[in-house]
Length: 355
Ligand code: NAP
Ligand code: F7E
Image (cartoon, rainbow, N blue to C red):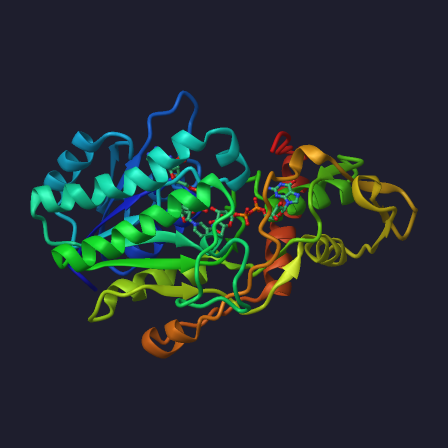
């Protein structure tokens, strides 16, 4: 058991909630930054704040926002963390085309604000930055590793590129223990419902349960290297436990199309799907009945797409002893079975709608 203190921005998100759980179990005192919201935004950490949880007295929440630097300084002075995990972000790639300035404000300048808060308060803390495979964008080599040149394709990726470089610069200029974890897509039962994997697991479960007839998607041919979020959380922590600050790729080194994710999801629930038509006229139909269950909606196409991502995590394996445990088929099964049971029990479909 450790006596350490950690501060997590983005604690209410997918990764933040798993990381909080992971650190509390290791004996950390955990502080989390939460945003004020008009509707409840703490569903993923409810089980941790409940007094039924044995760790709840080690978890402290603070209102804050990466757009407010005075508040970051105050939180650092109050909490004196040994480790900071900067996971807060406007994390949706397609949404970043709609709100590019805000995405830069939070994802790029927000990271700078955090690093400057460390300098100004002179607090000695290790800093983890949630960097991303989106930096590779229009990929310059396959697979991508820590030396692959960046070629970002969205306002999100460009903001995260600034964050990546400012972390590296502050490490070199001010000797901060600051690290970038370049994480490839990682998903889970807690994944936001507007990301494609969760949108699929929810809709496929709803169709098989007879609650829904059909759902709409965009590009079915992009390839992603999808891993399981809890595996990646351990990697984030290992990055800060190394004796030298450095940047690491975390991935599974296996990629699949969105189309394959859909096919595998139906298979988990005992159905098969076939495809008919081309482009925006393509349809996915159930083999058993011929019924249309998937159609294409061009609203989900991105102005510039990232066609293929495949990560090479050999550096993390060699230096940190990190390897992903869950690969594609198990990931799909975990997500689809979870949503199937949840929707069956509640008999409702929380339709992600919109993006
Ligand atoms: P997520 O579920 O979207 O969570 C994002 C978190 O950031 C939420 O807690 C959100 O608060 C918070 N947040 C957003 N804007 C904020 C602001 N202005 N000030 C303070 N907090 C703010 O994302 P995730 O999937 O857990 O990802 C965690 C981090 O890793 C993000 O930085 C993401 O860009 C990066 N990343 C993710 C992946 C992936 O595949 N999951 C891969 C590479 C990198 P609310 O709950 O109030 O919205
Ligand atoms: O899209 C295609 C879409 O939104 C994956 C974030 O965590 O990982 C995530 O970004 C693919 C894209 O994730 C729909 O065009 C088709 O090619 O699930 P996504 P993402 O863009 O890869 C990276 C590593 C991050 O850093 C980000 O924070 O799926 N796609 N149809 C669709 N995508 C969505 N969202 N919705 C659709 O209907």
